[in-house]
Image (cartoon, rainbow, N blue to C red; front, side, top):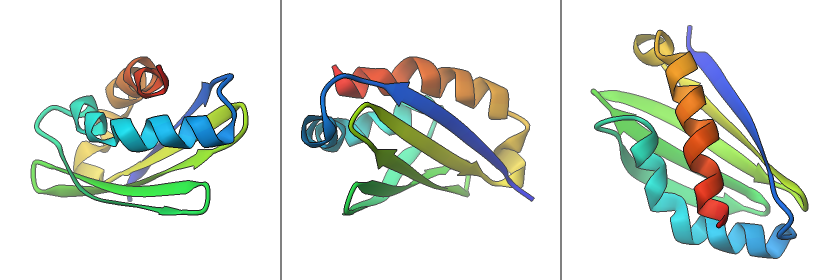
Length: 100
């Protein structure tokens, strides 16, 4: 069984601007996991669904963009679950940069 990693990223940009900045910075998400690449992403309303691939593993993820925060969930496969704490720490550090 996998390990979901969740992070809340507060912001003061409003919904539209937060979505715009995330859309422009989506490519930086692959930096969160060494060797990962962004293989798919699409918007459904205020939800960004994206897939990262690393070491032959798929990480199905999404971001729920709200007026004052972004709620991110990365569903790590079992092979990467042992790195959940490190991935969460890096996500907390790097993801807010997409909103700058």
